[in-house]
Length: 309
Image (cartoon, rainbow, N blue to C red):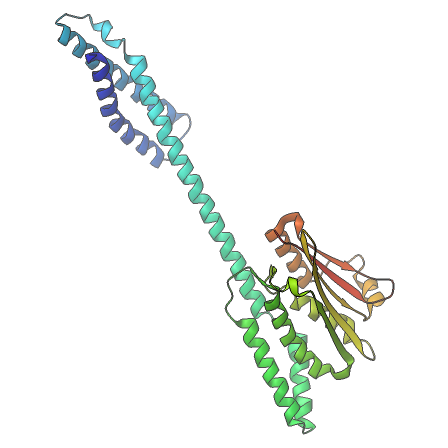
């Protein structure tokens, strides 16, 4: 009984020494196999000391004398305890270091995404801004001050909605529609009867989460490349529906589809479409997709697939 109690007591005391040894090796970078050999050597020495103290305590209680080699009898047990304690120490340290590295990586990724979102907010296509300002200038020259004031007001509302601080990667579809409608109001004033817009959104989809600033670039792409270059009126249709697994958003136009397809075939996607595809992949993996379809009837369709769960 005295032997067992003394062995456990001395092993616990030796664990404080091993803690200092393990901490020193960890702070030095835990160089393999050097650090393992040092820890093993310390465990062996301390195990022998613990065993000697425990055996002497046992014989002191019994009143017998002992030989020196008998003091090593408990060394394997003490060594196992100290080695197990050291392994637990390094295991915990490694786990905490891994978790800290994972959190740093997540924070860095989150910061990068927030920076990308801020860049998207501040990115206004030069052609859109130039054409809008040119339209305002034309209205002022023609003396149509009311229409010019309205367009300036709409432009201010669009910038206010675009630049509003928004740190969430996802927002409800109705928020994206509001921002897109601000943009469409400006384009309607600029293009007049040449632009017709149809919005067919299932009310059940309005609260579905979508990536922030994902819809307006698709609509801008349809107007800039499909409707604006063509002669006569054109139409842009925004549709949204959901099935059991996904939210499907379709932005289609009846513009210069065949001519645009001839230019796009074999070429890489533009910056806007590339960014949208990249964000869908980061947020949803293979479940999120952006497909560009060229119907035989003409025009172009951009189809977003966003998983609902």
